[in-house]
Amino acid sequence: MKRIIGLLLACALVLGCAGCGGNGKGSGDAADTKSEGVMTYAEYAAADVDTQVVVETYVQAKQSWWDGQGTFYTQDKDGAYFLYNMHCTQEEYDKLTPGTKIKVTGYKTEWSGEYEIIDAAFEIQDGSYIAQAEDVTALLGKDELIDKQNMFVAFKGMTVEAADESGAAFLYSWDGSGQDGDDLYFNVSANGQTYTFTVESYLCDNTTDVYNAVKNLKVGDTVDMEGFLYWYNGVNPHITSVTVK
Image 1 (spheres, helix red, strand yellow):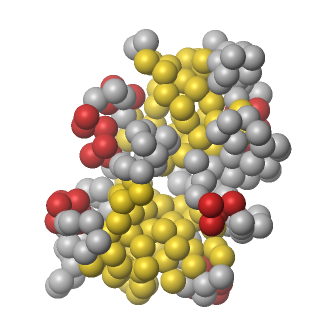
Image 2 (tube, one colour):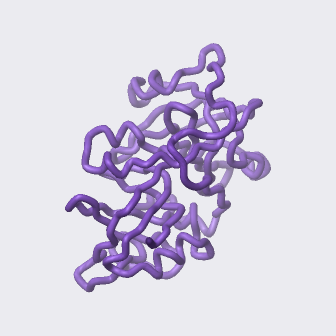
Image 3 (cartoon, rainbow, N blue to C red):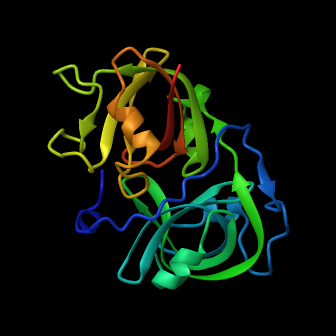
């Protein structure tokens, strides 16, 4: 579900969806040693909410830029960091392409189960890393899944279920009140459990392959998917790729 402030944005999309497939490993030098004063992912995960954090991470995708602030999906070899409204100019935002290494100083916060870094500043550093999607299908419904929060992940062999009582395969907006160009919500199941996944329109708008693939889904389709493991009162992945089997 998009935040109120996000609903006020007007098509501030710059696509940066990460690459396909894989086993959780990536390309580049994400295994490099952290700089002095920089947290490991484990230290970041253990940090209290509302405390300052300093991390080194790699841009994987960009969600939007608005009024001097950009939102990014980022990851290193150990975990992922969602950077919400990080301070940057439009020119700086344009330079932060997938793979770019950055040092980020901000504050850890939590919103409806989603851990993120806000009020952040950054420095571009040498290095590059693109994460490949880690298959987390077997973790659905398990407590361990949250340990993969915000990572680029894959879901394999899931079944499309009806999105509402009408039998539609997807909805525009979470309650069906939207229109073409808004977020898409759709239900998929595995092992008898159903989950709601999202195509976040600022990340992947209605000109993208994934947006149109979801619009063409049929209840009963078997699908493989990739995306970022966002959280909203439970798992709510932001999907960037859908393939019907």
